[in-house]
Amino acid sequence: MTIHTTHPFADGEPDDVRRFRGRLGGAVTLWTSEGAGLTVSSVMVANGDPPHLLALLDPDSDLLEALRVWSCAVVAPLSWTDRDLAEAFAGTAPAPGGAFRMAEFVDTSHGPRLASASTYAEVELVAEVEVGWSVLVTCRIDQVVIGDEDGPMLGHRRGRFFRLGSGS
Image (tube, rainbow, N blue to C red; front, top):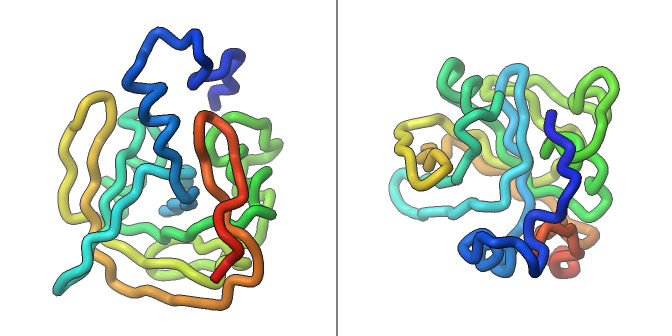
């Protein structure tokens, strides 16, 4: 786990590309596979037959390693109330006993699913390629469950969480 001592999107940050990426922001998703999880906001859905989910993952992450071994994962958008869980899976906050102990998870054929997630996708890895300092994974969407969203979703911009929409 890495707990950062500096703000990665601060105005003094010498990497303008990183600062630009930080200004784009996005919804925070939790990717979980057997024994590993990671919060990811660099995600894109490609509709089609079959539909796909693309994401940029840290090449050193436990999630990428698990995805390579198990070939599948569960992806759930996080809600505003999941901020502490998001920090733990991002490795930016301590999680005594591991991040999976901070919430209830349900075993599925694609990996553990956050029990409180009413919306999620079960995905299978079909391709990966190094892009910059990340690994672009392309996953086929095997199943999508769309549930009610009562509150705002969790967004991430410039290194901080924010409320994203009202949950419509």
